Image 1 (cartoon, helix red, strand yellow):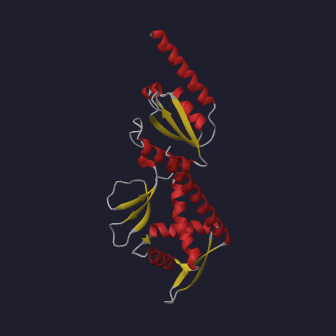
Image 2: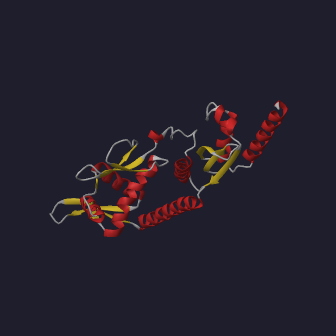
Image 3: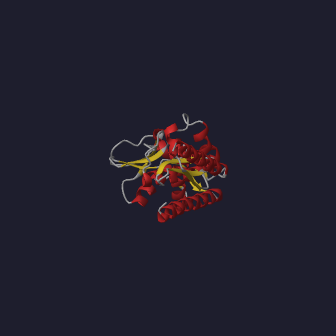
Length: 250
């Protein structure tokens, strides 16, 4: 029995080593299955080959020995970006509930977009927490830069729709488009306008409002229109990937 068990262990180790050597150096998600075919761990990686290998070369740092001792088979899914890897990892964790994924361990470090539904004038804002009641959270995202970029594109889309507007005009049109008391707070709106102008996505100029008040008006540029179209296309690809994964029932 001992000889048979040792032979089986050696066979398993050989198969896993062969699988690891064949993994791509690409971003994606990996699933560890046990001998009964159950998913026991789901992870994401910038490089599937390097990250999966790290579990076995240093199990105390990248997991536990108990985890690697139970791995019988490795499955991977290559995606286009790290952001898609994060989204796909969450989808699989919710679907399989692997026992070695107690929770996203560094969940608090991920950035989110939040909407304060408990306020008379709900705010859309950047945050790294998601425990408050009466908040709608979107995310997590793989980087703070992408979250701010998403907020920027909300403003950019508004300007693309309504034409040149000053900051308060943008906020008013956002409320009107949402059909409710919805607004971006100053801490979100003004930095977004500054970033977009620095990127060349919008062009600002001073003018006078209908109340004869001096204000800075913003209009979307050709570069801004192009950036908006490219981002929408990326979102559609990401949504298509998730829908395909759910349809396949992986």
